[in-house]
Image (cartoon, rainbow, N blue to C red):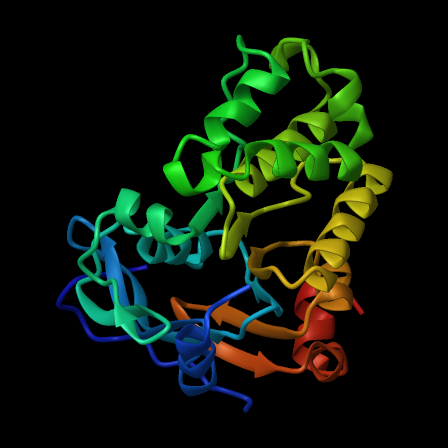
Length: 263
């Protein structure tokens, strides 16, 4: 972490739409982050970060605690103003757009810590996910889909969220995001604090969502499981992209294996 204005740290780098929208898809990445620099007050966290998301692909962002993964998601969603760089969606510059305008376009964040309304019921939380006009039009359809994906939520639809287990609450957090009819789903720490079996269930749900064509960016510390389900991966270190590429190739990288897998 370096204060704004100080010397930049140096690290060694090992390495269904209409016809007009379909044309845009071929010309532009679904989402592009270009040379993004930002931080908090005068403390710089990110140093020229660039990444792209392709339509219908699951991209994973890996990194140790405190390297800026959540900061990057906040900047992408407009919750943190970039100091430099751009965020574009299908070629449209959203860098200065408000969070609610990005949500209206279909960018949805499942935040770390879930941030659910625990004294409300499961169903009420899902209804809040479908608050926007575009999402409300698909409310019944999406409700059926999330209940089919997570039957436990259907069984507990009238229970208060505070009565759910941690894994069930994470299912609800993901489902609330899906109720918003996302074009891009950003997920911050999917498996944090969950049992291995519950984490596995949630990663299986990501695979099903990917097969259905949903574009996702996953921030995750369970490296092996995240790389197993991803189409592409980035590794963030010291506030900048250190490695990126095919997940299977990254798993063969000695630095990745030693640092994140303990091998």
